[in-house]
Length: 397
Image 1 (cartoon, one colour):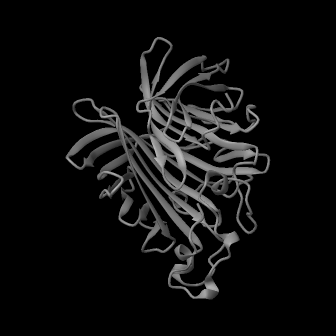
Image 2 (cartoon, helix red, strand yellow):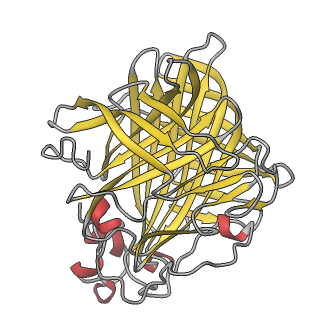
């Protein structure tokens, strides 16, 4: 989807109109693929992370996101999933003028709630120009993220309490729904990959950290009711310029919060030729890992997973109305490390098959369950599947 020129120019004069080449599309292959990136910063070597500054924006990079997912239940045990994402997309390496309308950026917001009992998925989208009154991110008085009236704002610094408030009023195609929740940090910030450098190719990757265990309390609003909920949330932060090489069609990503207190992130880059990609990786964080500060490779309780430490295999598919076969059932085999970790097999299933985000970027994102070989419930999590098309059945299987 090409962003219309009016999204960028608005009240600015004709001399400020960017060329069509600078108006990058919001598809997976253009947001994260090998497109023109001259003038942008790139993630090619480890860096020193600084907080709270790194909770904020990194405008020298082309793409950035703030990604909150959560698994929740109400007092009756009915389960729900939640996703809130703000994407920042730079359309030019630097502002193309001095005014607030000339940032050269666009923001895309996604909000989704899944009602597992009703087998329903609600979604909404906001797309705006990069103007401080429309969308933005700040950290001067704590993290503050907004796009229109959707807000993710830090309440207290001591225990990193952050509130998410967002509501979709409904329209001709979608029902009304909303969220009003708070999340509180329960575990240290986890630097993914090589102490925060998440390589996706020989030429670079992204800077990537997670807050994998955030206690959640609040409520969900539907057109006919309000539902108090509690559960666990996971915050992902990532920024980059070009991440995916041309050989990669998309990725399959998993964030698991196990009942025994462990957190697992694993993904595979899905290659067009079906081979395993050398840059697949993940992390396993033990329940005993530090509750505060920053941890990563080499720290107690953190096991970085290379492509040789685990295997992801799709096991079940669901076909949507477009003819796309989404892999909604998986097996994740994590091999033992010969020291502290024994081999184990995790069976992953979508709790609702249709959690497709039919938005400017078409992808599948939703709540999943985790079980062992005997079918015992091990935990919950979120799964993201990108780059699938109607002809892509079992690609990379």
